[in-house]
Length: 231
Ligand code: UDP
Image (tube, rainbow, N blue to C red; front, side, top):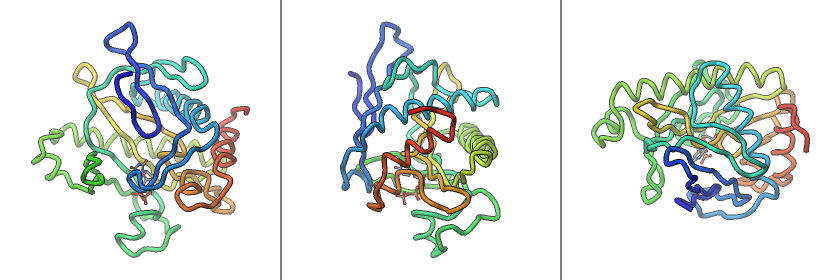
């Protein structure tokens, strides 16, 4: 094992430029203060992330994804991670609602792109482009690429999910460098996105865990079902 995160483990392979991601059932929230497990989450997030990475590829958006190996394992390109979380928002929720005092569910007149400095000890603070440049964690042209890819991912997924009667409220992306190129990394799943049923606004994502709303596993299963997956 090379690294253990909150929801995934990374393993080396016999190729130095490829790693295996193992998806766990462990869930954490509020910077690790709330801990639990969501049964079958690892299996569902592996399938859901595979689905989204493949969809994005057909739209020309490059990621670390190579292939799904089995239920809980995915083969990916080994990235040198850019320590920035890119959050794209289409509807107000979560920390944006608190920061600006806007009610959850308000549709944004345009997408909002935010940058967070990936640093557990600091609790991943919100930063702007000049902080990122001063920290030396990304060049201005790399930041352009992160923001452009974030917006393109949002457009592709929003349109796709609308047909599945799902709203893409907001989501978080991570990126890394591979052979000098910026690739999308990490995962795209109900752990990292807010999905609401478009008819009822029912939450079908990790907010069910964060806010103790119950039926967490059922929500992840429902997302996979709407993407066309089985159990
Ligand atoms: N998010 C994430 N990991 C984080 C923080 C946020 O995947 O460490 C995702 C979260 O699931 C949501 C979006 O980014 O889809 C925006 O999260 P927000 O800033 O509202 O934070 P929260 O209120 O969820 O802590």
